[in-house]
Image (cartoon, rainbow, N blue to C red; front, side):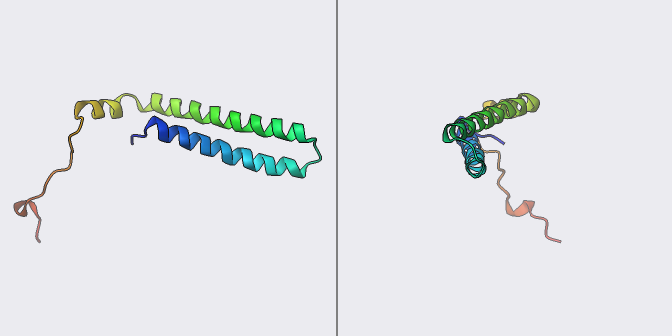
Length: 91
């Protein structure tokens, strides 16, 4: 499956924002200072974003060149085959 760099970045930022929001809600309940809550929330969001990027890089490494090579070989061509009336299996 092919994802553009923009969609990967949007997904990673979304995951980081959700984790940061959850952390903010949890830390606002705890009796900490406001600065500690804000710093901790920002650190969780940055760490989540960095972890998502590392995970994407590992997945690209494990997938190898199979997807990228397939996209380079046939730019702009569809691999969908047209089925004619003779090709139908009517049992």
